[in-house]
Length: 360
Image (cartoon, rainbow, N blue to C red; front, side):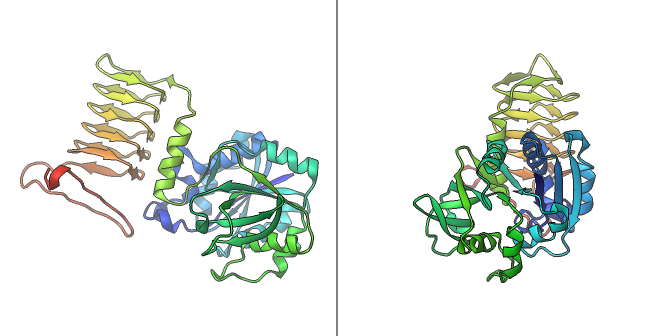
């Protein structure tokens, strides 16, 4: 079996972060989301993996390389224009060479991995196996309708969903899926939808097998999704300390403090991860926070946030909460008078300032 990770798309809902980096490289617990997908496939024994890439190919290839660090072989497959998931699968047809394959969306996280799915697919030999999860807002996803445990209908982002069963970003296929992709038409979004291709298999009497997800799953397409995924992953970490903590600091709860990180006069409450070479000084780092490698947090309180590599937060007059801060960003208090807020924000940024009673 081969693997196919879809890593194209523009990541418009994550701008401005995706103006300078691929959405699949945004870190969750200090690891790019894409790496979780690669690890899940390798754990399932799938080591010949194609990555469908678009305009961020160079960034993704620089980060993931040839796959040797995971014991895998990565092949980069260009997609000139993001025209839908079915189109992305279609451009990989030559790479897949008629073999059964597993598709994993490169910005998704699945807690239970895919090892059991691969085993089941090999045992039951369906034309397609789809992973489903109950969700609160099914209109945001592809939705499956089941009857007596069988798939009867799939619709992409329906305005009036027939069920609350969303298609998780993992699919297993045999080569018949390409026949379906060849005959479907673009949707109202002007994309070739993978749900339409799977529906063709259903209409043709093919064996499309559903599987209910038992653990959690996150599509990290929006900032709040990344923060939630970060929380979920941090809850699974085991504590380890390879950095330096001075006698005036307190560390409680699960904490991963990586090599070269230094914590001075600070309070750390896990679960948290402090990246290699990061500096935490006279600060509070609260639960569900990831501090990237080389970041500096000085005189600042922060929790439930992601701070990426190389960023600096200094003397913030209030607690930072539920924030996603990009690489090499600088946030600091204005020195002297007049006291004022100063911002340099790119397109599609969002900044929020809040204090009790309308006054600082």
